[in-house]
Length: 415
Length: 157
Ligand code: SF4
Image (cartoon, rainbow over the protein chains, first blue to last red):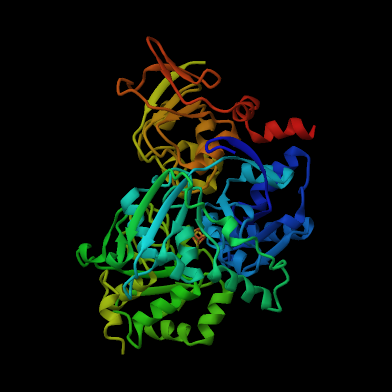
């Protein structure tokens, strides 16, 4: 297979959600006059219209549930955001070739799976045939060396990279994250990196499987309630790494030790800058949510910044945990309590306002600092709302002051 | 079939092609607002056979297929851009909307008459020809059939 060649590939697993899934693919499958090629290779997750707080949402969820039952696919209903639920339920392993009906499907790259997002028509083709076409990608290496400062994390790395190479810097190729900074990152931080490969315009965002990956997978398999983790026979990790002499399309070398907390100004993740450059912008809403920024690790990081403080008067802080499992972990160790004591309002574990849904959509002229991946105009509510992106720690620090703030100041003085 | 060209810049994203707030109204309503932020006159003036010529990263943003569907609905015969965002590119091909990339000369003018030939990989203007990057045969086959569903229908027939 040569880079750039168009090839047909067998798909190991297809992930769909309530928004882009059944209601969009069912009519297409009907038009094709065929059913699912293999229901065992389909995972359905409801997250976009959860909790069903509108008539439309309820209808879509009903349709989704009926379809799941009829087609006998694996269905995780209202368990959290698809990109987080999928690996947590043991569906992903290194070396798999997976498609997802959502643009952040590249999150699966954190587990060493080649996973990417497709639209409904593409998905209908996959569901009907078990295969798809792909242009063999070249590799863009993002090599990070050095130790991140306390208060700086994966989200900052990604916003910085968005600013550096732009939203098309990934050229719809495969990005690989490498270097000693990456090796030290826990799995959920790796998921943030892989997730935001979408904002770089890459098809996939891969991290070579290593001990961190294997331990994550082993922990899932050990969990009794998990029926889906398959055998833990992992392919030889060395085989899943890019050869050291492989030809790279580009090779970016980045210094983690020099990185400061980053924010991205409205309306693009590429409008990245160090938080110190944003001119003390005042915020009305602080949002810790989304697959990108409300995982257990993200909540822990935010809680560390908050300590025992309360958020500034006039600021509304919302928390929508990325999955119920993560919410439970955060509840068990007091993280959730810290966040709520600080003034965070707990929302359903779902896409919520990241997808522009629900009663909490941002109103006109609202300024929001958000742990989500995208701040396109109008995405989270009114087109006249202003969304800044930052790490969960930066969101927490900003909630405390009412202005976009550097979390390092608070970590230095944790109460 | 020839048409006029609409010249657009870099980074035309899926929110501009299919604005989120009109997603509920179905493709007809959505298409009416297609590109209204970049070209307020677009939906009213575009005619069947017209082409979009754009810069880098056309179709960036979400995976919503309506971005390509809206263009097809309005009769756009193809998009030629310096580069495409990948999911949009896939969606367009799967919906049967020709998308071709290439280095575009600065001399192209808005409203100029042109025709896109996907098999020869050229943009034919009245007085000159612009060579584009050729598409592989299997992609041309999908486009010729009018999209992936029509293409697969043949297979399941
Ligand atoms: S949380 Fe946001 S980015 Fe993640 S899947 Fe949902 S809508 Fe997409």
